[in-house]
Amino acid sequence: MFETVRQSKTTEIIIGQIRTAILEGRLAPGDRLPPEKQLGEQFQVSKQTLRESMRALEHMGLIDVRKGVGGGAFIVEVDEQVAAQNLANYLYFKNLTIADLSEFRRIMEPYAAARAAEGISPSDLDTLHQLNESTRENLKNKEWGLVSRDEIAFHRLIVRQTHNPILILMLDFVETLLEDFKKILKPDASFMESVLMAHEQIHRAIAGGDPALASEQMLAHVIDVETYLSRLKKSEVGRKLWENCLQIA
Image 1 (cartoon, rainbow, N blue to C red):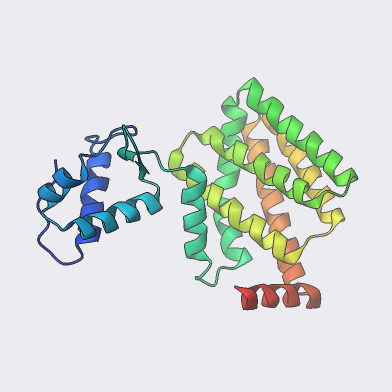
Image 2 (cartoon, rainbow, N blue to C red):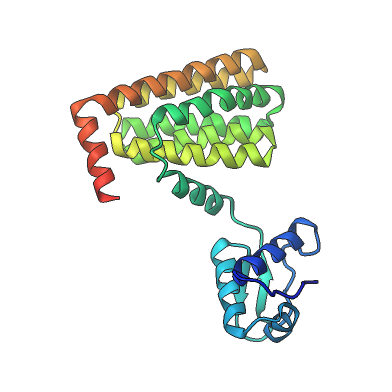
C-alpha cells in the first residue's frame, strides 16, 4: 500500500501517504494499519521514525492507537470539533478582527438561513425553537454562559441545513471564534436579549418557508452583532479586556 521513504522530513511523507490512502478510499474509518514491523519495512524507516509519525497522526486525530489484544493503529474519522478548534488556534495568530469574522458571516450565514427555510426537518425546526426557549430561560436566570451556548448552537444548527461539510466546518469554527470574542468583551444582558429577538425572527422566517426573508433577517442580525461588538471593543472597558486577554495569551 505504501512506498519506501527515502527523503528528508520522513514523518511528513509518511503522514502524507496515509492521508492520501484515506482520500483515495484505500483506508477507511475502522481499518487497522499493518503492524509496526510491517509498516517499517514498507516505508523502510526506523522504528523511532515510524513511532514519531504514528504519534503525529494520532495527535491530528487520524488514527487511534489501541493497546492489548486486538490493538494496533486504527483509522478514525476526525472529530469535527477538534478540526474546528485547530483552525481557530491557527487564526488566533493572524491578528483577526471582528470585521474579518463578520465579513465571512455576511457571505455565508444568510445563504445557510435560506437553505434552512427551503428544507429544514420538523425535528430541527423544533430544536431551533427549543434553543430560543432555553435562551429565554437562561436570560431570566442570568446564566450568561448558557445563553452564549444556546446562541451558538442556534447558528450551528442552521448551518447544518446546507449539508455541505466544507461550509459546516468553516462556519463552525467561525462561530467558535465569535464565542471566544464574546467571552473577552462580555456583552451585556440587553445585547443578549436583542440577539434572542433576532433569532426568533429568523426562526419564524425559516418556519414559514421563506428563504428570502430568512436570508434578510440573518444578514441584519450578523450586521447588528458586528456593530455592537466593534463598538464594545472600542470602549475603554472593552479595550482593556481585549488587551489583557492578548497579554495572557
